Image 1 (spheres, helix red, strand yellow):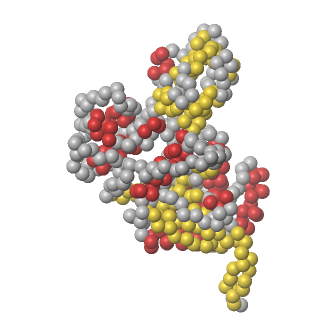
Image 2: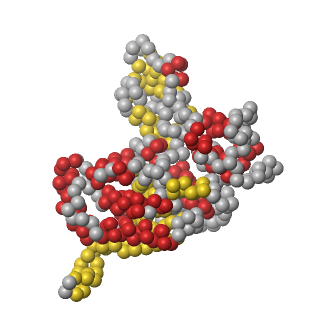
Image 3: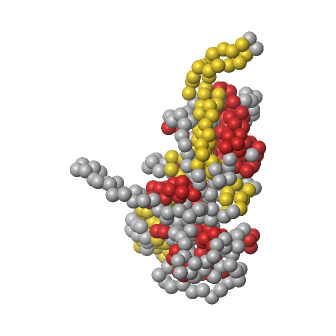
Length: 437
């Protein structure tokens, strides 16, 4: 028999640690290769860790709510054979690389680019990547303590420190009273929402927020503090879309083994509208606008526990309708079954929220930072509508749907936000019934 150390695997760029949520097996239990043995949480997603070998769990090294670093042993297994993994093999675990030259060049106005000999006390936890950036930018420990971290337990992430460096270069450094930075694009705002004391009556139930709900709450407050929201509305006749889907959904499922929902059609229309108005596909960095090359569509997805997560369809403009359907189904399935990887929730440049899936007619969605716009799609409802024909106007039963478009008024004016929404409307209302999938 041999001893095997189960290591916390690499979970994507910038993810250096994870918190143990729960063990799915106990000490003394036998596990098979590829069994999920523990649920973990990062500041991006929750996921399972499978074991690459079969064996018996003889010792659990990281208990519930404890934090493990990437490459650190979280359990010891007893396996068949003579050899287990060695210390040298543990060190070969892939870890995220430091930011490349091009990434650092995008930071506006760094104080200096050469590395310094800044040292940090053990009171401040910094991942190797964050520490490397701090040393290169000559950021003192007192400055680091002023940064409000968005990671687990308020720890500073790569995004936090890059945002701080970007804003730091645009204003004099106040060593005596360092300013907390939320994100590079943010105007000065309160670090957190005001806390009020709510009276608790007899019979009231107090439910502590879980980790994901805390993250959602913090992100929503930040988003509203940062971006001045404007929302435009439009009602769209999607009768052709409904007819087309009804015609193809059974054929598609039989051919591909995949469900054909409305979402691929909505994404296709949004991508075409973004190509018409690329200044919707941007982010703000200080006083600069970053125009994104890739079109990555975030897809707000409700989870069984009532929380929300936004997996990302990467390079959506390069996918066919069939490709979009498969990508959407895969992301939705993995989101609901805690199989998403951290990179699956990163890099969105525009987001769609289907509030119609809950029977809602419309909504006023909050823009996820650092994006500048989000589209909410309402329920499709049969209604009487006026149609123009060669013989005059008639009233007919049509499939109608509201869409609401929230956008950041710092960079998206009403004309741009409204025209973008109108183009999505036109693409859906004039959907070609002969479109192939």
